Length: 343
Image 1 (cartoon, rainbow, N blue to C red):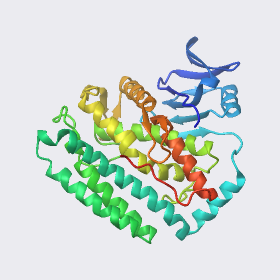
Image 2 (spheres, rainbow, N blue to C red):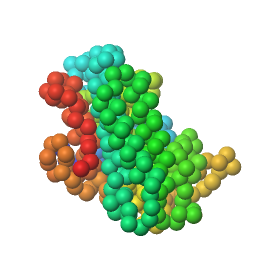
Image 3 (cartoon, one colour):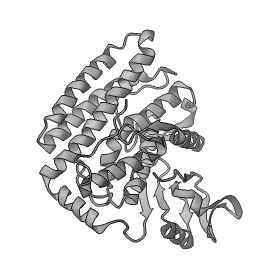
Image 4 (cartoon, rainbow, N blue to C red):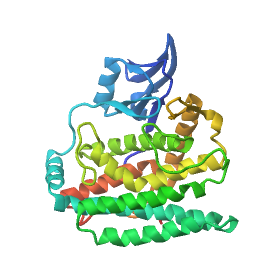
């Protein structure tokens, strides 16, 4: 298992990235704010209007460090990549599987199963921890419903029907997520998923964290030699990392949703941290983005026993572990792709 390196998050719109030998420099005006050796990094994520020198981009490409640019709200803008890496035979097999609906179905089924299983696990965990503090009939009902959808996923032989099952399960899960919010209940309410733009603070936090997860999934898949744009559940669309979105599905409840709710319940997020635009969209202030990034990095350093590999790994390496397992199945070294399932 590879070493978990650092990701540099640049949130200041006045910052500029430059190269000094084997170091990455973050400049604001004439002042050097940060100087980091490139070998300590596995990725750089820029939010806002941050610029980067061609020399810095070249260094990132040479050292295999991903460099991506996003809007202040987290919307993906661009990504700097170098020459295609990995095994061309692996990618060719990936393309053949994606072109065949029947072959894609097995992968898609496991992604959806992992998502619904982990969503149910998140709700069950909440009931174990807080069920004695109130009546949560809606959460109980969603757990039962998600269990029934797991059975349907296992017996589904049509990818369009599978997408419908995933959609119904997501609606049920997000429909009860408001019950999990125990802190500042009057100020933080969640009535359902909204994006582009997010319509409330909770959706703004979720979207921002999903952006960070998407970056980690793309980096992990590129490391294992797979093409991030060719998926099995999410079909190809120019510019969309479909395989990264596939992999994200099973990891959202554990890596993102739990963290977002914890930040709110622990009062690390306050209404004053958001800006509501005239259009109704909600944006996060820079200080909140820094708080979330710090919590995300801390979360990634925590360790768990991987349910399939039976090895202790940092949580931040889960996308890499799943990408490795996915590549092994595509090569034919594993009989099936084992989704990450919470225990």
